[in-house]
Length: 153
Image (cartoon, rainbow, N blue to C red; front, top):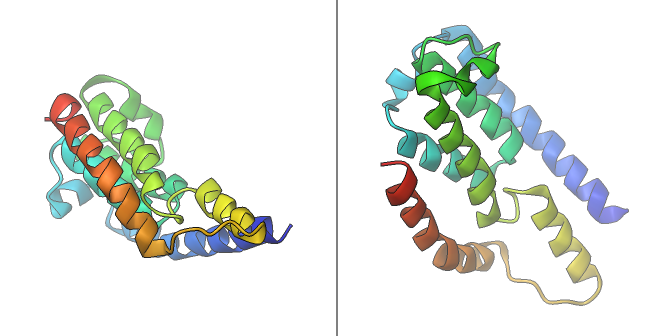
């Protein structure tokens, strides 16, 4: 159970550290996308993806959708409003960035970290955090650039 406990503690910490960002969104309300210079789906794809690489993708997704909601004049409390109309490409970019780029590190996706811990426990030598980032970057970065050019430009 040790790997599961380790992952649970890690992600509880991530959710706690995401609270200041959520508080900023709640305090400042609409207009966060403009303040951050976000205008296009590709920007949301990369911002969400890069954050999701270092944080869990679930709180990153929720935070990015709240920012996108402010961009289209929606209510961050009702994120379903992003599913229709002009906002749909933003939600698509956020979803893909959070899910796909979560694979960039051991932290971006809970199972990555758990599999690493289980493998090491059974004597399998696993790459260090930065070595894993190097491997994933070499393999995935060209794919993410291609996805950006094909779907979000």
